[in-house]
Structure formats: structure tokens, C-alpha cells
Length: 191
Image (cartoon, rainbow, N blue to C red; front, top):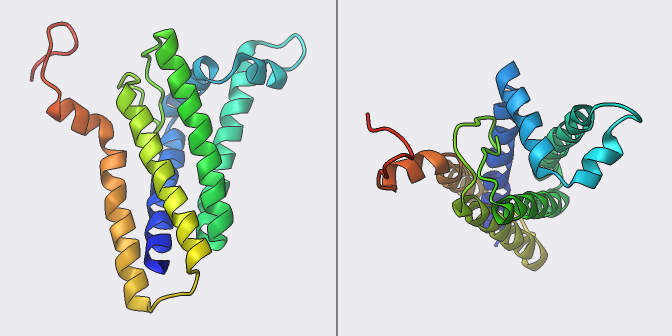
């Protein structure tokens, strides 16, 4: 069970760390993320963070900073306090999933800038991605509760490598969808 805990922690830490780094990699990525938060976050949350008489964009910037801080703190907790980190990851993934579902219900397919890139529209596959990540977090929590005893160093290293490798399809989801989704007239051009 300890190996499952290590793999789940590593998977979520890699995905969330890539998310933070992607959003911070440049001015354009940060701007895209703030725009996505402005669209996707609950309006009352953005209003609550907007200074009196200030522009809505200021509230969106504050909410975006909060999301980044929460993601970074969750990565740190996944490394230092496994159960707390997994629980925080589940809360974050639940909030992100709710925002994506809300956008899809409204017909909003604009990019979410989840990993800093803003070139791919929101799709139901993004909800599935988040649910699978949440499932990994829940499995990690169950493993921590059932058998928190450390395994050998070799087993832990293999589990961490497996978790890191499992992160790749999640990080490359949009590229994989583009690769395996047939071209349709009007949705993109062929090379």
C-alpha cells in the first residue's frame, strides 16, 4: 500500500507543479490564466476579492494568485505531509472540476489555461482528467489509512518513477486529444 501512496503523491505533485510553473512561465501565460479565472471562477468569489469600486479584473488577479498559492502549497504538502497534501489536492481538483463543468454547461469552450497554455478549448475530457486525478488522490489517501508503513527505498523509488511517468498523459492531454481526434472542417487546419 505504501507504494500506491508514493505513486499517487508523486503523480499529483508532478501535475500540480507543472500547472504552477506553466502559469508562471511568462507574462502571456499569467495573463491567460487571469482571464480564465475571470471567466471560470464563481462570480461572487471574484466580486468578494475585487476592491470596492475596483475593476473585476483586480478580483480575478487576486483569485488567480490564490489558486497559484494553493497549488504550490499543495505540492509542498504532498512532499512533506502526505495525507494533508492528498486532501488538499482533492479539494483543489473538486473546485477545478466544478468550474469546468459549469463552463461546459454554459457552453463556454474558451481555453482554461490550466497549465499556462491557452490554446486548447475546454472539453469534457478535461473533466475526466480531473476525476482521474482525484481518483488517484483518493486511492493515495486510502493507502495512507490502510498501511502507512514505509516500504524499502527501492520500492519507493519505483513507485515514485511510476507516479512521474503516469503524470505524462495528464500533462499532454490536449496534444493526445489533437493527435487522436479526427480533423473536422473548421476546427483546425491540417499541417
